[in-house]
Length: 115
Image (cartoon, rainbow, N blue to C red; front, top):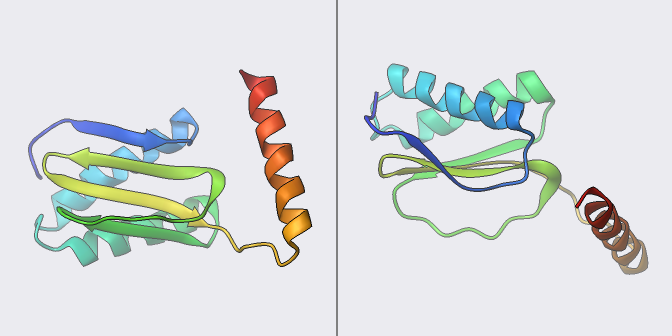
């Protein structure tokens, strides 16, 4: 296993999902060498597909950029040592721009109510 404490960079997941991601990443690092980024990503993706339904995507590495669309509550970016892990559930874009704007406004108002 790669030594080091997990550090969450950004997330909108519930705490239980975050903990699952961290625990599974640690488990993956027990099975795979840190250089086997694709195998680590495959392991995390398949486990999250099983636990939380299909559609999860995972990127693992030490140097990458990203800009992704994800389902609300289904995104985490964290580090274990120098290894970065991005795990998210993909979101299909709405075909109607007006409906997309209304959906975004609904999400924003929901966030304001929570805060």
